[in-house]
Length: 112
Length: 115
Image 1 (cartoon, each protein chain N blue to C red):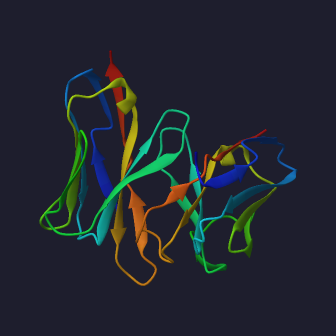
Image 2: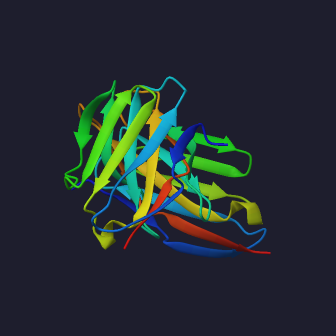
């Protein structure tokens, strides 16, 4: 079935260190979205990637979509305590209804 | 502040109770969604309404009954729930009529506990 694999499940970093989470699909995605969920909060949209090889930046966050549109990554440079939360990717598979599948998420903790 | 409003924020109910979760958005979005999220898990799609019509029902048990009275409102009626139904229920909306074609705006969720 369609599923989006996301790794790692957990990441503990020292403040100032970099962080990366990866998502992978066995089949081509129409697009991929990234969400952040703070502890006790709700998912908040970060970005959507649509084009093959697309790279987008938001301040310290860099998002990439693979050339084959099967994988994506989120990289945070110089983490801060405000980056704490769970980061989910969500891949869209084609079809008339569309099928948005969430990865299991990567929980980031940052030690000051 | 979220632009999708959910009530109540917390709900405790017994297995024989009937309750409803409510969701409202005033962004003019034509697609609205119910997701269920268990602890340490990703959101799991339950229902999609597109232009006030139910377009996706992800094989959800009949004890969950969605309703879309108009384009701004979405309800989830709960009846005879089980303890394993305890979870965070998230409402979301999107401008596009198809899920995943644009940003999902999530509400803060209704945390449900079934005793």
